[in-house]
Length: 244
Image (tube, rainbow, N blue to C red):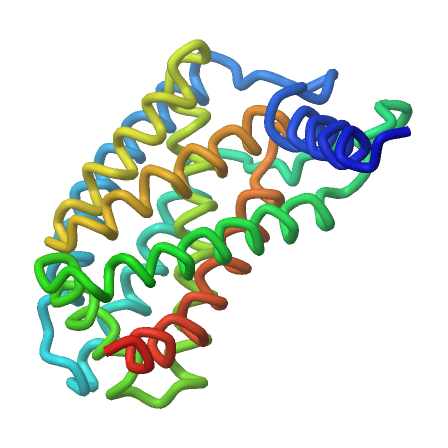
């Protein structure tokens, strides 16, 4: 068989299993749970958006940044659990003969997203209008204690997915869940004031929302998000410094 064709077929099977074909047997929330989710989601979004803007408006190196982002993660996670039950979800295999705990596919998707964004940094670094806001955001990582920032980054990634792909996704009408989830996630990110971060939110939101739709749970989006965000934290600052 043609090697190129084999690669294309493997990639097609991977995309279909990870992002297209929903796993059967997923349960739906009863109406009273959906109503509760919607109330909790609206309140959490209002508080979370303000905290996000405030924490990222702090000057790099300010110790309050750690507390602010930690509190933000608690808000996202607290809102998620207060809204109702959250499900782990199951993943398709490429063979389509069984269902597994979603681990390998989410890691692969996270690494693919990481490679895409690091490649995009080559372009961003050459456009001052785009590079300056990104550099300002990365200064928080450069000025802080790396392992502390890494723990906060992972904690926030988990909390965001619990809320956005857990509570928010389940609160939206089924046929609009993916689109609505991406739009709300991007709008909240606008509060940061970094255009490229909004674009990142759209791309991450699309991938993670499709994973939520396919698996019926939050584990796959969580793994993808923290794989991407931890990789960006560790690799993007030195890469941007190298490209200056």
